[in-house]
Image (tube, rainbow, N blue to C red; front, top):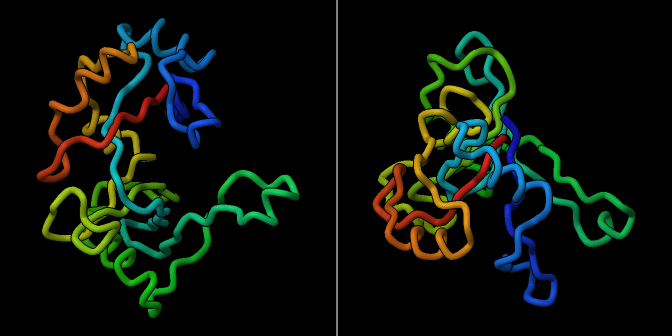
Length: 180
């Protein structure tokens, strides 16, 4: 499944905040087929984007997302990419800890993108006791995180979101990620 960026327009005059206006094709996709289970809603996790490489159920590589800097954006480089996370670096040690704490016994060989989160990552907004990775690119893991009966209108989401609790920790849900 592929992530849908947003179902509502972003307002550049408001720092990219989402407006109540549907966002073209993404909104039509969600509004048109969400009831047929062709789209999936999952919880947005506040963490650090990573990619784990697995071979024979063994973690062999950990990478973190790198966003283009201002100069690169000026040259037209807008998409992020992954760089190796340095196991010896204090900057990356919690990413490695999260990767090691992630159960990959059922994860096939491949490169799997995910969100590292936990007690030492991004201020631990989920109030969890350890670091781990949610492998959102793995179909089985993604399916286990599906949230049913999510409203698709701006007003519906505005009312629904504040009452929802995280599946991953002791905190309110941050948001929804839509997949098609």
